[in-house]
Image (tube, rainbow, N blue to C red; front, side, top):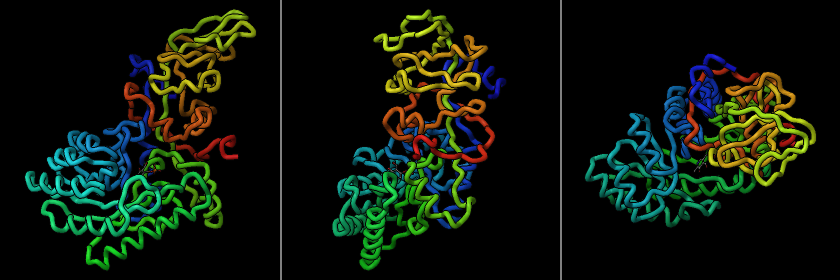
Length: 411
Ligand SMILES: Cc1ncc(COP(=O)(O)O)c(C=O)c1O
């Protein structure tokens, strides 16, 4: 751990470290996977999966990403207001009112499945002079956003009749690619997208971009790359699931170890001890008195809780790392505090740094480990770290082998 860095942020009680080194390594892995001719779109929605929108967007672009992908209009506007000029694709719902705001900026394309939004986009684009490229979403089996091919063709016809918007592509999103190693349903979805593409071309539409690949598809199947991929979780160095990892091991077993991406987790989360106290044998710790000391203990108090994103389900279950050793959570996670057992850890004092997510010495807490304790997925663990936690860009050493998931969660 870099003590000079920690001295420089002495005023912070808890924070996240975002590794530029890991971002560069992940972008390089993804670029190698898709090749030079494919648009590498990195999904930075939801505050860059909790990693911090603007700094991450800038680092991804510096590292060689081509496009940024967000869910909401306001996220695209934040990127432009920060001076980021790269192409942006808004993949979530954009209302007629919001599209008028997007038209104030250049190079923001939207996912489209609504004729009223198409008309509003055209009207706004004619007013501002910024053409809005649109990607019509094709319903292939997720039933979340999108139109069946016949309706999509009608919408494309409308788009072609309107000034100010242009059909740039079609897109879909896979329903069942992370949760299973049986990818027949996802393959059916890809086939449906390819059939839609054929129908569009037969109807005379030019389609520069057909896109479907999220992280799992990008890593597993070259045939989904087409002109563009939309990679989220893998860019942050996390595997979409243990099933994806298992499938990669299975699929590429004969290609050698070099073909298994060594994804590098980007985010670490740390906090300072704010109090160290003795608890006598028989003393309780925290709300509900759910923890009782069986022998005299030393407890450290950490100044964050479920409001900051350290989930209450980690009560009496998780551990943090202090001075390279595990410090188990004692009692319930409070709204802005929790307590850990440091009886066995030397030199713990006010100001000592605890690692909630990430590595310290030989020990590591992974997003997958936290997710398994919380009954959720690694996506939610990082995406829910509260914006109050400052994100600092740092350089780090690369992990020689990222071993994405702990043995306990992959078995
Ligand atoms: C439409 C769309 N594309 C791509 C992604 C990226 O998925 P992943 O993080 O699994 O790469 C998401 C994430 O939820 C999404 O909603």
